[in-house]
Amino acid sequence: MYVIVGLGNPEEEYAYTRHNMGFDVINTIAKKSDIEISRAKFNGLYGSGMLEKEKVILLKPQTYMNLSGECIKPFLDFYKLTPQNLIVVYDDIDTLPGTIRIRKKGGPGTHNGMKSVVHELLSDEFIRIRVGIGSPQDKSEMISYVIGKLEEEEYQILQKGVEKAAEAVIEIMKNGVDKAMNRFNGEAKEDNV
Image 1: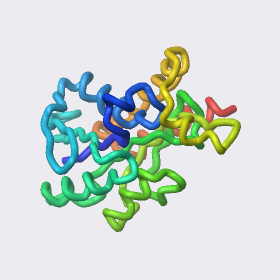
Image 2: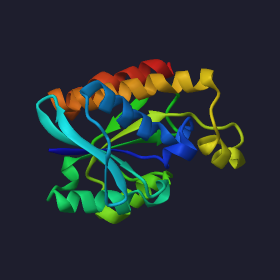
Image 3: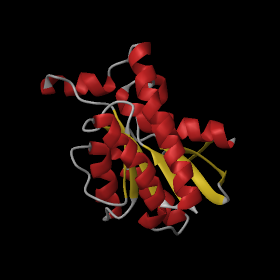
């Protein structure tokens, strides 16, 4: 069983922002796999079902980004799961828009949502999928860059990464993380050429 988490902020206010790419991925997987995200527990919205013959929980923490771990930890504890049963999907300024990067483990970098997850779990040994959003030319504009509303054209470019991340989750369930990394991280490199 896996808990698949998208990081983001409550959607009524923060839909169509770069910081909500994780939620967009969870919504895409839910639609593709016919899992309804309609239940609430531990400050999160979630749904459960099957994905490639594996039981999964799709989770969108409602704690606001910087406290994401405070929702994820109780879910893992409740279902008696370890960080090895966790996949976290989130936006990444160091990855180009429309591309993704998959890692088996690693530090949180500068992402406050990931800092919270690592802090609460006392572990960085979990799969993460970073959805590229690029970064602003002026670093002082970072907050408005990540939570500002997107124009439709730009949103559509980012949705390519969202689709790839959803496919990557399915690939992990089907064939394992190594095969998913070989397939999708290679694409990211090609896109960066």
